[in-house]
Amino acid sequence: MSERSYWLDLFTGVTWNEFKASGGKISGFRKSRWKTLQKIRKGDYLLCYLTGVSRFNGILEVVSKPFKDSSQIWSDEDFPCRLKVKIVVELTPETAVPVHDLKGSLSCFQNLKSPHAWTGHFRASPAKWKDADGEAVVQAILDAEENPVIRPVDKRKLAYRPKAIKAKIGSVTVPEPGNDTEDFDVVSKKTTEHTEIQWLLLKLGSDMGFHVWAARNDRGKEFKGKKFSNLSKFKSELPLQFDDATNKTIELIDVLWLKGNSYVAAFEVESTTSIYSGLLRMSDLIAMQPNLKIPLYLIAPDDRRAKVMTEVNRPTFSRLSPPLAEICRFISFEGLKDQIEKVMSYVRFLKPEFMEELSESCELEEV
Image (cartoon, rainbow, N blue to C red; front, side):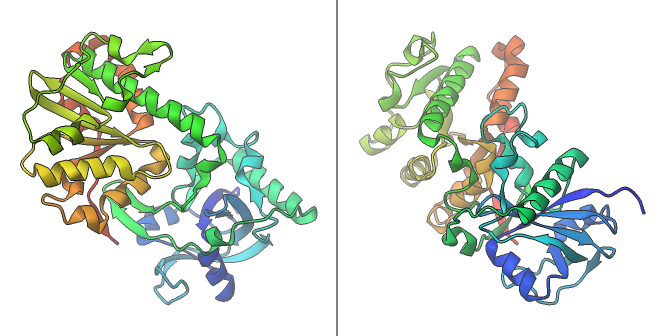
């Protein structure tokens, strides 16, 4: 037998219970994961992770080659790409190992570019893990079995039934309310994050030669001692080319780039639990000015990508003409920061199309 590999296997409380109710002998994955499944061998370990409560709750050993089968095990999805498994260790949700207890042992928590970047490693399964990370999780689960510690869990999170969606980024799952990232000092970090991204967008636009505008209620802000209003291209007034209601909506958009009296781009920065405020401003703008040709961008942390995609495609926004998802594009905080670092030496030569290349469509298809 070849050396054992370790693979992340994501469950919700619901899918774990259904896995157990079926006998606990089949682990299933979406059809898009078939190619990855081919790399899994007998004897490999699947590291079971409960997404709603962010805990490792078991170890499964693979005992078969991958196969396809659509017989019903799970109520919400087929998960037709399957493996036969046997349970090596099973913990209850209350005794499962919180992922944050392993921050010192797992590589996904090292050298983070943002406090939330680690969550990117828990977005899809199966996903191969480094041997050292897999061994650390296995040891922690074995220790928890030997010396269980009871930690209460929110039953609502265990009962949550996520909705799978298919985007151009691949299959994703709608994040749970009150998701993993809320374990951090949310309010202060997200307020600072929002201001930082606003500053970066304002400075980038100014460096590219555009006039820039910050939301009317944010004009007095500063980031690390640098006042928004001190930027050389900072605009004190917007052109009044629309009706009063439209002008007032535009004034509250987080960041605008302008060339003369023409709008080049509009940005809404979303870092809080609810992303509705920015979306409503964007949708109001479309509803009032359906022929407006301003590129619209939603900027959010990478771990909130699925949440943004889903919200943009809600029926409320899909019924607009044009639908919000057709004209809004997504940019992650992390992607924005990385690209700004790369282009600073020639930023003054960039064109607005740079942002379109950096961004991705928000259009989705139901699985």
